[in-house]
Amino acid sequence: FDQREGLIWFNGELVAWQEAKIHVLTHALHYASCVFEGERAYGGEIFKLTEHSERLVNSARLLDYEIPYSVEEIDAACRQALAAQGLSDAYVRPVAWRGSEMMGVSAQHNRINLAIAVWDWPSYFDPEQRLKGIRLDMAEWRRPDPRTAPSKSKAAGLYMICTLSKHAAERKGYADALMLDWRGQVAESTGANVFFVKGDVLHTPTPDCFLDGITRRTVIDLARARGLEVVERAIMPDEMEGFEQCFICGTAAEVTPVSEIGPYSFAPGEITQMLMEDYDTVVRPDRRGQLARSAAAAE
Ligand code: PMP
Image (cartoon, rainbow, N blue to C red; front, side, top):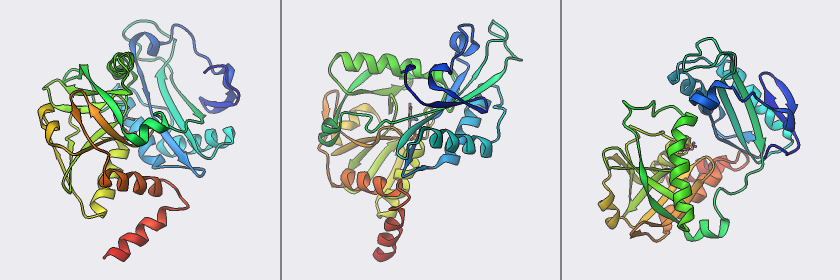
């Protein structure tokens, strides 16, 4: 990946992709003092950019540091990085971390760095599998108690659990894994939030120890705009038996139907299909108006 062509926004400058390097004694590499974002641009516009920039700043604060750029400056830097890559549909990855000035658990005065890379990332899952619904393994690792880790931070350190779970699932032939939380309640997949459908009601876990995804909140708004009820609550794994449809959602994954989670199976259905389409519409600046018009027509 580091041998690609292009430009990366790095501490205020655009540098050649292959030259965007850091030292091996970077604090973040040893002690996980790193936070990041995952954004998507559609038709040249980064969807909900400011919400992502705000989450990045807050993620850093939860790790006890301040990114030396304002939300407005981060927004502008993301747009600059996107334009520099010359892409209009792309994935945008801002990352902030403590530098290499001091080595040790404590690194109060190390420089806080910010970089933003942009690349083409059409589909998070195999497009064919995605239409049929992806298969999820039940992960052995659990999301930690919020008293154990800053679970509201999109912190690189928390992704150790995700990579372990996703690798284990892939080795067994699954596309991804569903993680429970430390109490044994359904939490999320390794890079997306989860929803279940029963009748006309959507059920999704209360995000009290994992990210309340920007896509998750978008999907809740879209579902309510369609007159569907959305219930946020604690969901126990054995309840999955009674749900008819399931999907995961996240910036990279968008809305992706799920056909299987361990022993439970689901049929990709109408509500999932409708929300996939509504999401595709709302993210595109040239089509967004269509949703508002169909909502107005329904009233
Ligand atoms: N949970 C995890 C672990 C994630 O990595 C992501 C992707 N950022 C999400 C949930 C969904 O968040 P969003 O919709 O803001 O991308």
